[in-house]
Image 1: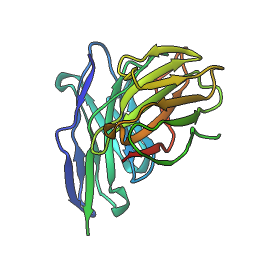
Image 2: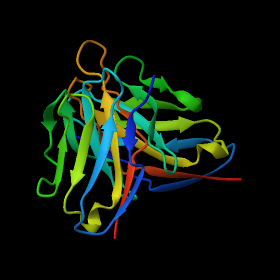
Image 3: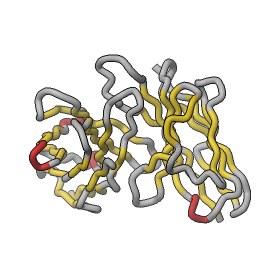
Image 4: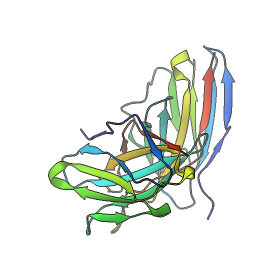
Length: 114
Length: 117
């Protein structure tokens, strides 16, 4: 069965500092990997996705993530955090087929301090 | 392009009452999903439809939850009778399906927040 682990429930980062959110997955085949962001009271918005090719993927809002098959990881990074980045971040894994089902991690809440 | 539409946005009911949520996916998306998101947790899949057929409902509590997508477009999720632990946000999502290049990306609605008292 596929699963996702986000080991950090909360992370606090100073505005302007760099950010890395951790994600480890378990999947029996080549995974499709996603990062979503959720602001309070809102639905989930896709930040970026990996399904093949270059293991470093660029997303919206200056985010990037690196797929490391040997470590079963797909960590999210941003070089300089803005106060508007405060939100909850979810990593998800799926198979990418027409019957794909995404399995989500429990999320990491990002707090940005001035 | 219009996104995934859900209603109502908020609903408060007492336990043992019933409630229904509606979802209209992105036009042309054959696959529709209902996820349950309990406070502090990630979304959990309840049911997945491909057109008007059920692909996966293994985590749907069928004694109280039901869902349908009769014409393969919009969908309704019903809870009857509701329990306190059903308090959550119910997220609807849709995706295109099949064919080369399908990345399995899901597009989410804003969710329906249910509070059971």
